[in-house]
Image: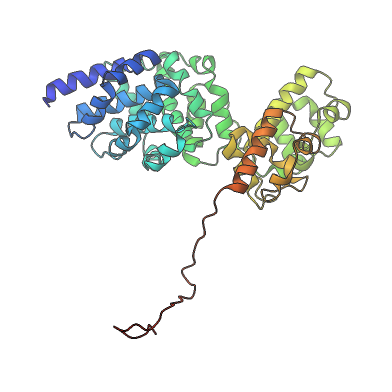
Length: 399
């Protein structure tokens, strides 16, 4: 309980957790995580900063097994006061990073959500100025060079996550790093780690203004072209919107062919490889693969609300985010959430063109589990209250 000792030891643990999964496991086994969580109740800003960074490092470098141990030790709950701290923005920022990394682990996502900490992330990030943070980091002896490529590489999966909070935190960190790397003329690092395409994807598809704005800032600072946002209601696209999308993904060569055949959003979402080759003149199989990679991404991020009354898209995304790509295939066959449990695997393959067998099995399994899950009955507050009573010897009947 000596403040100076706590500052020193928490600082050492912070750096030790930024190592390998084996090191993190050994530290947790030896009580290092318990010590950090104990110190989370302190008020010393230096100790709390080390604690927040230690938890972020453990989440980032520890792997899924150690993330499970963090949840078992209530790390997500202890991150709440750190993320709510009013004294130090760095404490809050690293706490937000830690909790969003934990939330991207599907096995523990529900436990992280129950902690309530995730709700603090996006509003806090929206209030920050990444360039001011960059200036503060440049003035610090610990961070003057910024993060290494290996460190930044670990943020890319957060950009590609289906969770808004993860995208938001990662975009902020990369925006801060972009300001530092631009001064050092090392902006090529973002392409090397694969962040550039992920940032462009966020600009094109994200509906969150904070995340999209941060991604645009990063792209401008590193000298990349900022794409235009794509209208999400793809099923309602006219031919002109399809033309814009083709230009944006680098398929200008085929614009006239698509225009001649009046390919709109509905046709685009139902295109087959045979139609692409024979009718639209895309002869190269490699080019077709590139096209379908972009089309799959479009299907995954599209908004189907105008034709998806049962919210099938979000249900599929709950099984696996990439399963949203199958939404329109199912809807155009007349299948919604209420009917999906009656569909056979053969019908999914032949009628709905879901070609990957494991995906078909997962979708059908989830549909049947939903059918047999217990239903919670909700009472309405405006209903009639009914009292059943009888006369007792000690009192009168309830009126």
